[in-house]
Length: 347
Image 1: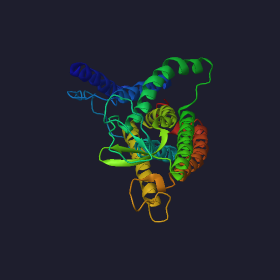
Image 2 (image 1 turned 90 degrees about the horizontal axis):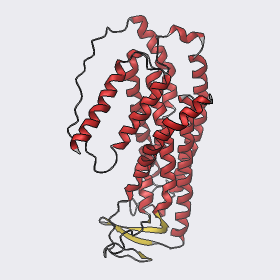
Image 3 (image 1 turned 90 degrees about the vertical axis):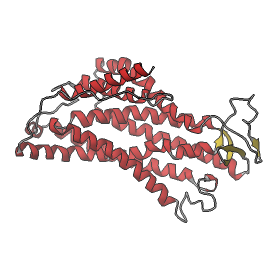
Image 4 (image 1 turned 30 degrees about the vertical axis):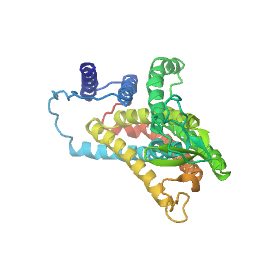
């Protein structure tokens, strides 16, 4: 299996290197490339996958001359146009990274069902505290996101996109990104309503104690499987926001800046994660919705539902701003002024 995995990684890495050598992939070729590139990444997010033995192939490209001062000025103008589009994706990344933070925290306070009933240590007791062991990590629901990507990318690439293309209804990368924001918005809305329902049980003192690791959590008697819809929605949003975002960053950038602008794209995703963590820290101050002085990490006395709805409001407002900026970008990008910019792949 190590040989197969190593060979697979070498093929992927060779493809990545090859795409930088191609002068003009064309819109549909670049779209399909990023679909499958992203699919390959998610394939190796599955458990028991270790890319040992994978090595970068030698770079055999001939050196290219640097841009002239006129090209530098034109490239800067293109960057000024692209950057606002990418910056308005930051709130989406704030929502996206909730699946690795607050979604997991919420899952710890939901009842984790015993799927190994014959194992004596796997049990939970309602309205009491017992030493109960759970062998199924609550973070495994993150795999729902990965599975959605692995299933829907081939469906989208082989069925949905060709159908829309034949009907001349295939949306642009920016339109797909707006759709991805909508699915991210619905994910935190669903999480917010689930948290409201969970708190109803907590306020009525209907709890289930469960020990996970060395910590005991007082969970609501709601199954953790109720979180699956919000994970599925965030996975769908990833297909429509992250993949077209990569496609946009590559295809709309001048050739001499494609690597730099794709780097900015990934950097802004990190900024979104940082801002989400900063917002949690701010709301954890005294008087905040997430302030839990007695037991940090215990959200039963917090109002995390309001935090989810706040994220949804931020995402909705920036989605409207994104659509306005994207509309202006598409009008100017296809206008006469765009002819003065360096030749670009339009993806």
